[in-house]
Amino acid sequence: MRILLLAMIAIGLTGLAGCHSNSSATAQSDAQMASGTPINKYCPINRGDEIDPNVTTVYKGKTVGFCCSDCIDIFNTDPEKYLAGLK
Image 1 (spheres, rainbow, N blue to C red):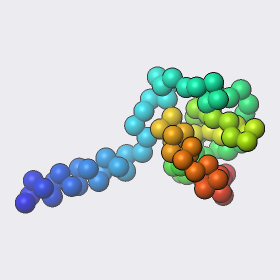
Image 2 (image 1 turned 60 degrees about the vertical axis):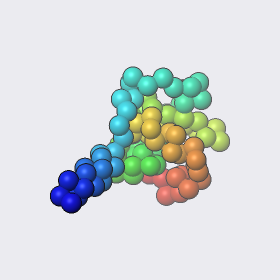
Image 3 (image 1 turned 30 degrees about the vertical axis):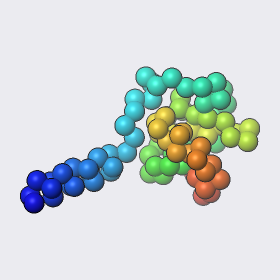
Image 4 (image 1 turned 90 degrees about the vertical axis):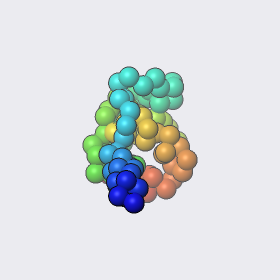
């Protein structure tokens, strides 16, 4: 029982760690390598995290920045949801 509890805690903490990829080592598509300045200062997924200006995508003609490339995949599932209240 103790082992099961420890395993559940470990899995839960892994989810709180935020992004797991190294954005500089991740290949990006042409659309993700936008040339414009991001419209936001904070990640639309992990809203408390500042963006990496090198990790971007273009949505409706605007460059959106992210803290890591994992967040781009999440953003693409429902961009309007994540753009609401963007800072």
